[in-house]
Image (cartoon, rainbow, N blue to C red; front, side):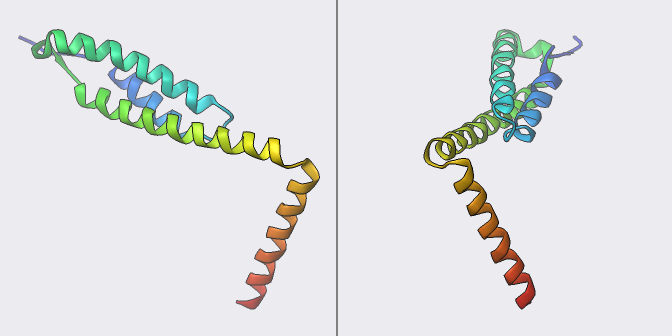
Amino acid sequence: MEKHKLPNANAVLALGILSILTCCCWGIGLILGIVALIVAKKDIVLYSENPEHFQGYSNINTGRILAIIGIVLSSLYLIFMIYLEINFTDEELKGIQENLLEKMKHQQEQE
């Protein structure tokens, strides 16, 4: 009996990778990670019903893990950005950024 690939194995893997790559894009990584988990769940159910008919479970599992990592990173980024928006004005953030740039230039001059 010939084994078939799981229908969404490569899509889940790609979505998991993209969720990590776009974790700092204001929620895009979060959305991609959630979609990857939903699609992965469908394929896991399909695989668990007839494991002898399908191959590609490792791609599903890897994509699912990457999606979870992407969701966590995206959530942390969003929480951090919301914290900055609530606690600092634009002028304060610009001041902090300029101060950091001056410190970096000063360190480079000392080396």
